[in-house]
Image (cartoon, rainbow, N blue to C red; front, side, top):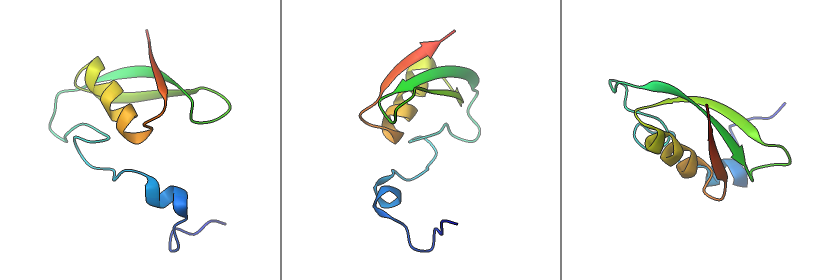
Length: 74
């Protein structure tokens, strides 16, 4: 079992999970976006997230995983 009491290098390098950086503000009017993220592992990650606009959804993903490629799914 992994403990967060002693974070490893990967945990320390993650950006802080803050409103406006990796997720929308609490009172913002949002809608659901479905994104395919490549470049963070062997397989593509399909992420469903809430954001104000498509541009903001991509910004939140890029802030969390800087070197990834993002594709918006319909």
